[in-house]
Image (cartoon, rainbow, N blue to C red; front, top):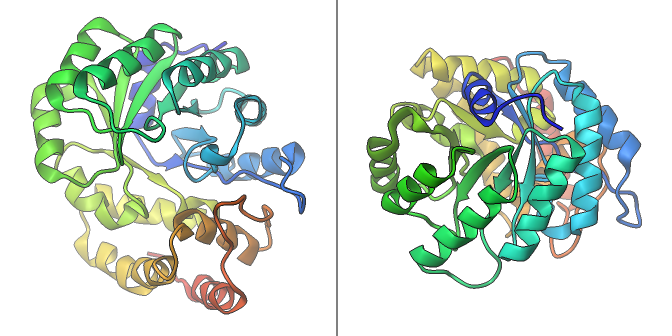
Length: 307
């Protein structure tokens, strides 16, 4: 059980960089708890992290069963030892999302990241009912992840926040600046705002101007010191350092990522392999980088200088 209130969790998350660890599999694609915990502990050794998001998009939540999400969450909580909030992924249909939220609380997580519903695009009324059911199923913090087919507007979000004090976060994976500004203008400091577009560093500075003080860094999995330095540059609004980091690493990295669909996760697992901390393959339907792409990524990582 979490020792933090939802509001305390939200405040901590807003204050720094967030880590989204990959999930470790063996050659037969079975979850490897020991290596996963070791990886989380390594990430947490960089003590300025303000949140560990387990079984999220980078953690391949879409390929895990609810029981496996529980195992991953419990392992992350054990690794964190209360040093930083642990947020677990939840999603799919309402019944499964409710089950996952309850399991996250049972595993000791401090909150859940509510990912989009499965398959269909719901109405705003349907989205409100879905999010409301998940919020009421747990006492821990809930962060709504706005992306893909799960887009909620500012009026619906306001209704949900009025009825659910534990709804404390809004993560944007859409990139609709008008919608983001409408949400922020409506909700102000009632919510913590998290940048959640793929390779979030790309959008970090303009999003900071919209009240988004933190973001999910998948790059932290394999370049933690670089990721923290880049975050510092963003918070300082140091454009020269940001542009240098974009030019020397982020944009070449994105170019490799964009060579095939689904590589937003695969390239992160390739990155941890490149630094000698392999996490195993991705699960289908994702595919791993090919040998040439991996070598180019490794050369890029090896050549990366401090921001």
